[in-house]
Image (cartoon, rainbow, N blue to C red; front, side):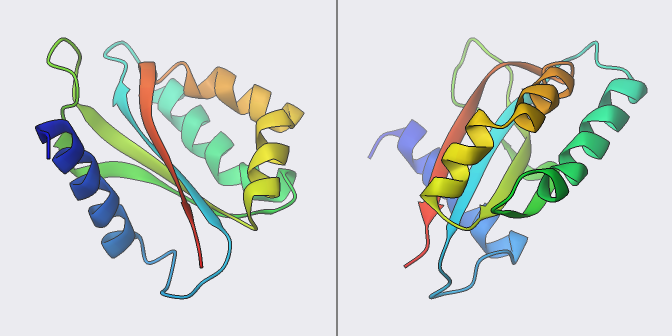
Length: 130
């Protein structure tokens, strides 16, 4: 197993163990991504990002809950880029809710505030509950 794969598995396990958002046997989907913070992001940029992220569940049907914060252990996937230091996990009703989220105008508005706190590129994965 490559170092990159081991790191991704470690990140996934850590998010699941410490988020408390998904329990064994729970149905639905968890959409997670880790990102590298933008060095020039201001406190106002971060405030808008946190506020916009917290408001998403009330704006997009099927999006139940959002977790956002610093990763307990930053992850380095690319030696030429900064470490992924922050993560977001979104609990959704299922794959259809993820599609609705991607196409919703509130998502487009949120991407604008998100882009002000992160370097381009994320490490993204989806977990489908059984």
